Length: 371
Image 1 (cartoon, rainbow, N blue to C red):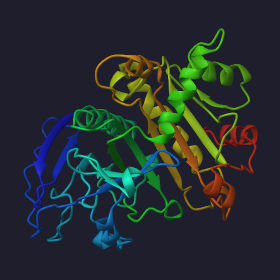
Image 2 (cartoon, one colour):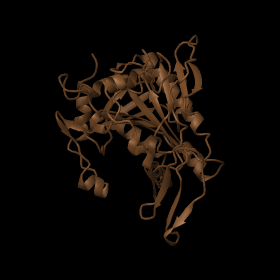
Image 3 (cartoon, helix red, strand yellow):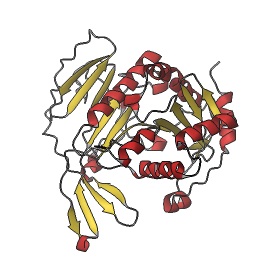
Image 4 (tube, rainbow, N blue to C red):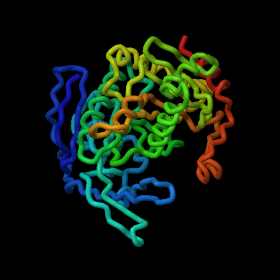
């Protein structure tokens, strides 16, 4: 992998990841852009103990542009985009409309101290998987999929060192049904200035499980029990295990774990990195066949769960090493032409109702395996 860093016209960083060491990236961004100047804020919810981003500048972000105006395509034939080169393998750049940006700052108090806010420190990046506008991640070859994995890993290493960053989240949203506003195959990376609520909840469950009599690592026990049950296992490779969880929230939801357990992408071994493209591309291609070959491509979210980056030592650092890196892949489509909406119970009370039994979902995902 060859890595080349450059700057866009407004000062944002762009990083190219190339398969060939001979690749040369020298194209300049010739757009007349003003300097990037986002100022996101985060506000604390005292009832839920959550942080909420307030980002007025994102209201004007690019929304469903036609294919010939896609900002993620290469700059060709006189049309200038976010990616100055005429071609590329994988490109990562700072989001023009970030949810988190800049360094940490002091808290400000409101409402007699009950309400607090602070700058939305961190960074948001866009990861363009290919220059081919009409492709999908599932269309990538194994070599390109490995390059994306290496880019995710490198960005995790870089972003985790930024002041104030506690957690790095690599993810992909695919499909207009999910809310995607750019159809070009791409993902995003968020560097959060806090530990996300979902991860904090996992860490609490992890700690509580370890304190029970005979309690071992929660993630290890979970994977072992899924393998022992067997009926929800979708794919079991030499270095990865994929299964539909016992209490899946979504109609078709797969969790992918490496063997052995590691806390983040940085700790992933070479054997697991080598096998990942085979396993992940197979899962994505199965997702596209769930509802039949005549159906549109399945919308999905693919989300990497990594341990927060805890500075120093102590209980938090020890618990971090007990966390298990894993990828969650799920779709909101529950049947051909039918979507799973987050309505009253899910959105109002965070209680999910799943119409597809996890065992039936796993069976279907086994049925559509590549021959």
